[in-house]
Amino acid sequence: MSTETIGPESAPATPANQHGYRDFRLGAFAFSRDEYFAHIVWPTGQHVMSIDSFLRALQRDIAWNFFYGIVNFDGVFGTTNHYGMVDVFAGRYNDAYRKAELDHLETVDTPVVHDVFVDIIKDWTNNGFDPFASPAETGSAFGVKNGDNDAAVTRERVTAQRMVGLPDDEQPRSDESGYPINRQFLDVPQDEPEVRAEPGYEGQIAAFSLKAYLSRSDVTWNPSVVSVCRDSLMCPTTEEYILPIIHGNDRAEWFIQLSDEITWEVEDRDTGRKRATVVMKPGDVAAMPADIRHQGYSPKRSMLLVWENNSSEIPELIATGKVSSRPVDFGE
Ligand code: PHB
Ligand code: FE
Image: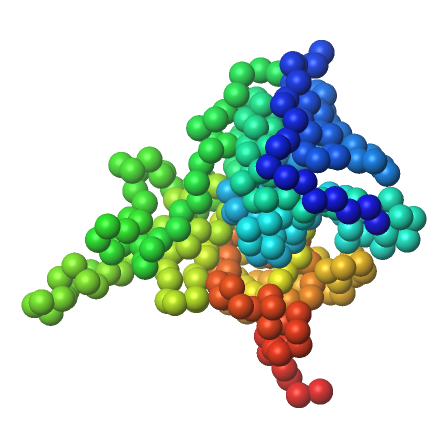
């Protein structure tokens, strides 16, 4: 494997190519796009991805600030979060690339890779394409350069400080606030709980209908934080089509399927070897271990609650064997 650490300087972007898109560099990685594809080149190899898949993955990597652990755009290219630094890699978690020594990895300060990724997504996203939307609810990513969609690609994810509905925090969604009910959730009841606080507690107690809230989500595969209790984060999300990344965990995560159905393909995090297929139906709960990677398939829009432990100590505790990579043991 070739490894490099690069500093804050990244080369200036080039003028537009014949398709209207700029090329970008990040260390020894070069990125370019044409009408259909993103091309990634590094000293020992090259890779091509469909531009819609690439932009959907890139959008999430940016909006989630490189997320927990590994964001694989596909089986070859991705990022690993070291919380302050980010590895940008090709083939690092792919047995065949590793064995052929075609893999490459660069460790970059988070703001540097963030800025380059933002430049790429702004330049390569055309007017009418929203990487966060379901394919049925957005325009095309393909073709020659045609305007931009900065409003969509600079969207920040919802993160409540304590809980949706509390004063000075995120609020429930409504038609008036610009969140109509999604076409696939028209049957979801919209009534909200009534809160009657004891005198002295007004403004300190809140409740909201999570299903009504999710029925009005305009994005897919984008967990938002709706309640926070120390390191315990409730991150519900609405899903449709395919999770645009293959997520390599650095901690255990819990999934609670709130509606409809998602199939999860679960693989070994480091080699990509198949480990399980998990089909989740409404009410099912799954605990995803810290040594896997997974990708979800949702044939119609569904509601999923992701429960994350946000403690920054966990990756180290797992790496040093102080806590198990399995969130639950059934006594083998
Ligand atoms: C996950 O990687 O666990 C994940 C990411 C995004 C989602 C759901 C699950 O929307
Ligand atoms: Fe995950």
